[in-house]
Structure formats: structure tokens, C-alpha cells
Length: 588
Image (tube, rainbow, N blue to C red; front, side, top):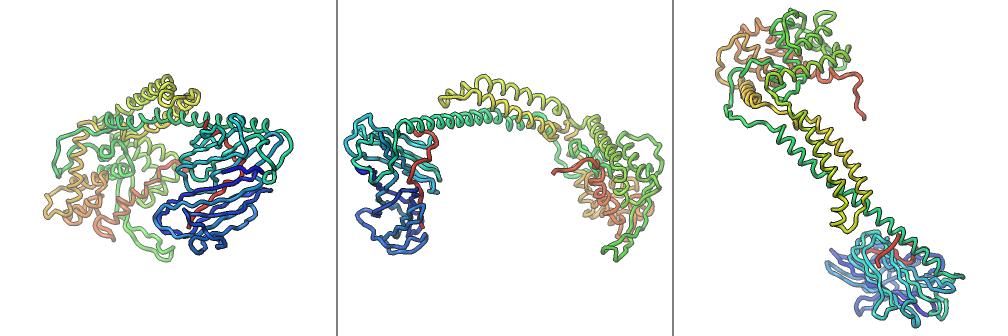
């Protein structure tokens, strides 16, 4: 760039494009403010001078080595045409710009964006040089660059008076601004400048001081953000290690030596709800409730009678007869475990008006949802307690693990508070202690919430005891036996009690359908004639199984939810931006 003696700005831009693919056109937009104009545009590539008069519409086709200039009111657009494919090409655009230079009584202010924020690509590097008119003396010329976010610097050439700018890694949509101030006496006229009466240097220096302060504030903010992020990382890094440690220490299953494929009879005499809880590590669900209910039928606490019911289908247009199981009260005075008594309590509420088919259970449970939800939660807790008291679960990690995590978090936070700022200063050369401590406090609160949430992750802190792990493998083998039972060519002779026991455990283990199928194929006639759990219905042996077993599980799913529960839903300084020129461009 060169400042003419009358203040006109003579600009020569060398733009290197790295083409990936085939391209035939490019453009350069130069913004214009009131009183500014772009004149005498020339486009050159190497020794080839492009001819004027080419079309200026973006995406248009023109003869290679031609260009055109369009006046668009608030900007001048230069469009040139060529042919390029997968190569680097450098184009030189030269033009005169009037009105941008501002001449005060004492100084001349040239504030130019040498790279505009309308460029949507990043820029590896940019160099700018501004030659001044007359014979300036060292010390008479000032040069500034904006914004502070750009990596770069300004200096003077070897003559001590020619300003230089250098910047690298300019992000997309980011301008680079060069501001040069020199004595008004170097101009011989102001024909190419904008004249403003009065002293200008004082205001320019105040503007730049304000830019420096804004840049320092931005840098301080960036340092604060950096230090807060470093504090966050320092405190968050231990979290995944703590989770891994917690699982390894309290959640991973003991290794037991067991490799049998099948167990042909129940491996222990634990109740079905306890077995369901064992295989799910202490969790009791609707399957455990259903298994307990059918076990109580087997033991005579409830009565069960196959019945036929009529249900509306096809929107009430048809009525269909279906088999169901009607439940009544039997001998409820026998000695029962706590969770079995919880099941009896809920069923007694359902049967308040007399025996009911299983298909009506969900409706009646929801009629007293709050009380039944509380009783169901008592059932789940009692089953978990029973599984633990049987020595099958190790819950020590539930209390020890979270406490250890909290202790670790406090130690890490304390160390970070004391040595963190010093460590950041050693690594980066500066540290914002207030920001770092603020980050420690904020992230400590976040880590506290994380650890609080981890405390409720059963899989992390609850595991089976060695005895429980071995028994879980044996019950897993028994489950496989029940799954494959119906496919066995010969089944061992079994009594009615064994068949009913198999079905109850099959419900708890989630394979009731397999047991029903085995009974259909292999059970003696006496089972269907005498059992309260197996019966013939209009949907085959075992009755309408979706009503009898899987259906009651589905019916109970969500029935115990409390009615109150619901879901919710130098360098560069300041900011700048006041310079003329800039703009952007592109290619097609």
C-alpha cells in the first residue's frame, strides 16, 4: 500500500487461492462508506494483465483473463475469470481508494481493514506494508493493529518509518485492521482525503488507549476462562477413575468356579422373590411380585379358579370369550415373611368386594394407588433386605464407596485450591487466582452432584457375595434348563408339586412361557386336572397365558406408581472495527 501526496490510498493486494477442484471465477467485495470511492481497478496474474468488461454476476461465466467492476452502492465488486483445477494461483488486484484517509489539522489517520470479516475461510498468514508520502522521520509515525484476538504484530521496516503488519492463523469471519498515523505536513494536498477540522492526535491516542484497555480486559477474561477450564479439568479428571475404582472395589462380581450348563432342580430353597432379587442384584420388580403371588396360590394363601370372561374387541363391535384366572382369599393366617405379607395386603385390597379375575387387578390396584404404591415399595425393600440377610448380597459399598469418593473429592479440591494457581502460572506464565478459585468452587459443586448421583447407581456399589455369586450361576443354569425343558425329548417324571414349583420359579426368572410349553407337551394329565396354576382354556394348555402370567406382569407394570409422581417434562490490541476497506471475497 502507498499513501499518495494528496491522501489517496494506492492499494495492491496479492491473494493466493488454493483450489481444490475446478474453478473459473472469483470476486472481491470492497465496502465503501460515504465519501469513499474505488477507482482504476487492475487485475493481474504474473505477467498477464486481465482485460476489463467481463460480467460481474457471482457464478457468471466470462472469458479467461478478464475482469469486471460493479458499483453496488455500499461496495465495489471486482469479478475476474480464469480456469484453475487443483492448484495454487496468485492474483494481484490494484486500485485507488479515495476518501478513506482522514486529514486533521495536525495528523493524518489511515485506518484500513487489510482483511475483511466477510471472508468465510481462514487465512494462514497476511503481510501488509504502508509507504508514506514525503520524508517522514523516525518517531513521527505511529502504527496500531486490531483486534487483540488475532495473532500478530506490527513493526517498522529497516528505514524506521515504513509500517509493517504481520498476522497468522486468522479465523473465518475475522477482520485484520491496520491503523497508521503520521504528520499532516507530509501531504501536499487533501484532494484524495476526507478533511476534518481540529486536532486529531489526542482523540486517536485516547481511542487506542481504550482499545488497549478493552484488549487487556478481553485477555483477562480469556485468562479467567482458561483458568476456570483448567480448574474444571483438574477436578473432573478424577471422576472417571473414581467410577472405575468404585466398580472394581465394590461392584465387580467375585470370581467363582462353576461351569455346569444345567441344573435340573432348584439349586436352593430360597423363595422365588429372593431368587428374582438375587439375579437382579437386589432389585425386586413386578415379576417378583407375580411370582410371590403365584407361590401363595400354590401354598393355599390365595385361591385360583379358571373362569371364562367376555371382553369387548373391535371398538365394542364384538365380544369374545376368554379364559382367565379368578383369585380369591384362602388361608391368609399362616405364617408369612414380611414381603409375602405385603403381597397379601395389596391382594386383600383388590379383593375387597370378592374374588376378581387377574385382568381386573390393575384397575383395582389403581383405585387405591397411594396406599398400594407404599405397600409395593415396602415389598421391594423387604425382598432386598431378605436377599441381604440370606448372605447373598454385599452392600458394604453402598455406604463406604460414596464416602470415600467424597473424601477424595475434598482432597483434590483442597490441593487444587492451594497449588492450582501456582501450577497454572508455571505452565502458562500467568494465572488468574480469583478465576481459578471460582472454577474450583463451581466444579466442586458439580462434582458433588455427580458423586451424589453415583451414590444411587446400584451397579456401582452393590454386588453379590461369593455365596450369592455362586448361587446366581447355579440359578442361571437352572433357568437355562427351564428354557430348554420343552425341547427335551424325554423329561424326568415329576409330581404336581414339582411342576408348580417350576412354574413359580419360572415366573421369577422370566421363563414362565417355556415352563408352560413344557407342561403342555410333557406334564401328566393330573397336572391339568388338579393344579390351580395349570389349566386348559380356550387358548390352549395353561389358559390364556398373557392373562395368567405375562399378562399380570404387564398389568402390574406402572400400576404401583404413586399418583403424585410425574415426569417433566507490539501485538494487536482492542476490538477495532472502525477502519474502512476490508470486505471479503470467494471463488466458484
